Image (cartoon, rainbow, N blue to C red; front, side, top):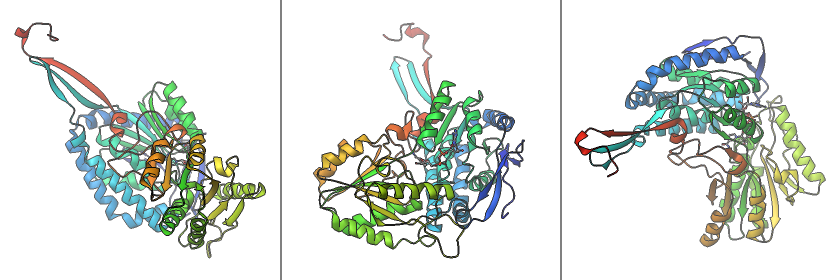
Length: 485
Ligand code: NAD
């Protein structure tokens, strides 16, 4: 085993989970046994919630300008340890080094946004009547939880923790049991940056721990990022326990390609979008809707896809189960009459034969009723659906139950505007294959890609992590009691 067994992080210290359930953590790159992760018990969660509740009284009283100093230092530590943190992401998640590094860079950007929060949460004050003032202030909620998926071991935890903590909350993080290592380093760096014990805690576990979090009376709010199936479970369970919840789910993003699109730029963008992070991104290009005659662009997409080599500039998928699932989608589409233009099945990476790789795959003539057109494949697979008009393309996009992202490739501004207006997705790209809004703009999809109000990052997240106090003050008794006058 390459690393010591993973432990929970409670009250500023790493401690063993009670109970004996655990899982192996295997690197999808080459099958190396990295560690074991405990599947904690409810009693472990009780300890973490107790530590967080005790830390809350001091932490929430600390002025935000003081709290934020810790996050300036945390951002510096992320930068200082960039290579080591990127290597760890790569090992546990299977991404390329550059993709892993991009996660740390994004984590830094998220932290920079959190450092700007003192400028954004000043509240409001107005003299609403003579001598009578109304003011608002953002108050933290208390102990909050963040439950995260496997595909971004650092970035997704950093979607929530800097903002939630700077705003005065204390947090319990439940990382994916598939990638538990990166968050341990995050905890160490936060401690080194000066974060008081108990403000940030990590509990490892599986679905049972997620259920325990949703049920725990000491937790005020739950943020979740993962598949739509689980987002639904978490949203309904947490809200039925009267908690605030924001649950981000899966995606099936449609990229509409019009005949006037710039061929090479479009092809490189689409190939990068569908294959980046081995297609394991909720923002990945998954379904390309080819409007009219775009064969010349499809040819270039295939050329680009063929340049993407597993183990070189394409990472692995998370495990054998994922590899088999992705390959099943390809085989099923082929059986139903789709044409495989670039075939990534049975891929291996030289010298990493125990790794779980799927090569870039381009499937043409996928029909809207096929599973490859409708379902989230979560692998480096592009399904091309052919249509004759933009309205047909939009009808396909609109029918998807998801609504994370959509994009259009065209040089026609009017057509792009029409598509922006009619696409049913929270994040839209125009000649951009991965339209992730950068800070301070917020991240969040529509429809079954997100349950709950507001977005998870940026300015929109302030409302989620705080409650607004409204105070009306009068110091002039001579003004009488009718302050409305
Ligand atoms: P997942 O839903 O399987 O797991 C997410 C979390 O939920 C993990 O911490 C896991 O332990 C827990 N979990 C798993 N099954 C559970 C159950 N039955 N009950 C309660 N908890 C359970 O997701 P994943 O496979 O880790 O991640 C991939 C998914 O996440 C994809 O669908 C992807 O689109 C989505 N995702 C979405 C976004 C977004 O912003 N919308 C971002 C990243 C990933």
